[in-house]
Amino acid sequence: MLSPSQNSIKKAFSRVALVGKYQADGMQERLKDLAGLLAEQGCEVFIEAFTASHLNLTAYPTRTVEEFAGAINLAVVLGGDGTMLGIGRQLAGSEVPLVGINMGRLGYMTDIPIQNVQAILPQIIAGEYEADARTLLDAVVLRNGKAINHALALNDVVVNRSGISGMVELAVRVNNSFMYNQRSDGLIVSTPTGSTAYALSAGGPILHPRVAGILLAPIAPHSLSNRPIVLPQDIVVSIEVVDGREVIVNFDMQSQTNLQSGDIIEVRQSEKTITLLHPRGHSDYKTLREKLHWNEYPSTF
Image (cartoon, rainbow, N blue to C red; front, side, top):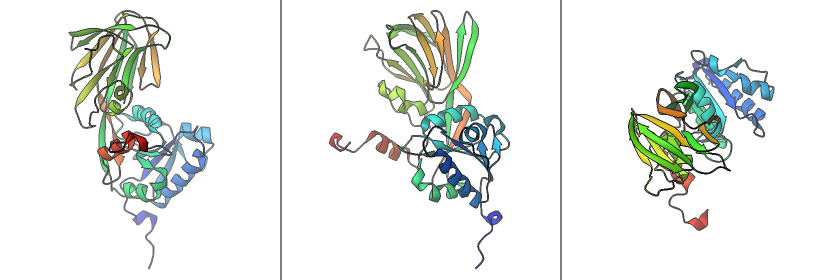
């Protein structure tokens, strides 16, 4: 019996780009193996330009992330959730879906273990997957009424003090309606995706990815009555720095802006989204069980 040719293999994605956490040990060989696997599925394989240059990968053509839209059908990210956050922000609104492959600990977004990729990735290429749309936050930093920074965040926008300064005082408004003045170590504005990140450690609730909301979670507030709150997705949160030294605002903890008293950070849901692809049968609850050790006794972990 003749084997099917590469062109006859059913595939939902024909032009696939690989993105890797180039600092990780063994990344070059891992990406070569993935590229070979994709080529066997009949895909045209590209390596993200930054990844290729750092790992000296020359066997496949390269594309910058800015060139993905319209040229790439699927981005396969090999690394961890931090790698996925970075590439997700850059691809937001491009309609290029992402698949996350983790090399060690299970990730919330990079949920395909590297040891299972040989079986799972061909299924996704063939169209056997579950799509998961994620929202982002759009943040503008205003100083004297002028924008000094504009950034997206897939997880969260965090206004906080430095490690050696005292509390920061923030005035928070929602749709121009005063909510409260808060003295604390900071304030987290989170997407549902980010609710399992920093906001969770600050006592915030876990939001299912399909919940349409924005989470505010104070960091070590001076008043115990300052509690996390989930707001509608169509609001604008305005955070003014009233007082504090060495105050900063972080975007997904991967970029930041130094703040001054009087600066205002306006945060709203972005019009841009990203799409994550998961294997058939993917369960957010299973991921939470495995990450948070639900149904286990403390002595077992």
